[in-house]
Length: 411
Image (tube, rainbow, N blue to C red; front, side, top):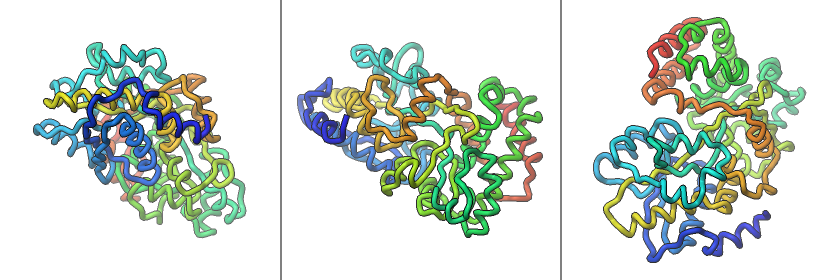
């Protein structure tokens, strides 16, 4: 599908399975505020507005860890928005259990979501006691290494094909005035680097042993010790970056000031906004070029129960719109993620998205860490890795000992 035909399809509101009898304003909260994210959100808003309703944007600046407490406080405090973003996993579990969220099972059944969803685990994570409470809108994976082709050209060395080659290239990048690895100063980013290293260098079985089975003995063992040694290399390579947000770190790669970044495929949206071309200006390595394995992470929208009947009706229109195949293509091409549906036309996909689709089609996926660990346990690992990156005196051995203790007490 070309961009022109896609725009025409979206302009015709008849393509949407539900339409609104009356124009209704719905506030939608999310934390998508970077350039690529904002462009993707605009596609959702445009499609919902085409139904005769109006998307009222409730963007909250900062990361999810900043936005989620605000969202939860509003919902539990009696001031709910009409729809709100959460990551897949257990972030909204308590809200659903407490009866704050709307049941979308009838809509999902009528539109046969289960028949067309490309990652069934993500729809499963929207399901509690057999009922569906959220709309999965994309498939995101953390397991990517993004590389600036020009940074390596400036350093007089070839673009690495895997993590080990990046580590070996670090001294030459430093000599050329480059930061070998851009890592932002937020806890979730540093935690994410560790998790990606575990998947890529340790493999799926190791990750599941540690996070799914909560095997503290494995967490304290030699296989995980190797991951902490690699994390120490990442810490050393990231020195001098001095940025906080993930998109600032991505910009270091886009502007060729950094060799690479470990970050989810949402980084691709930033490359697109900057006019960068995959394979020409930047290189993407799924699984860090070591293991072609991606996690089935993603974003979903939940719909708090509302007293207003018209807004409740419009919620269903919005949920249907988000899952619409044409909207899925438009949104995910801008977001850098993979569509949640397997029945969409992705002729416009770039090289990196096609790599992700091939890995997904081969079934080389792993559960999201968020679905294996509680928010409390994740907060503890966030704290650990933030301290590790901030304090070079913390040895890999000391950090691993703390990590194993966290896993021993994880829920």
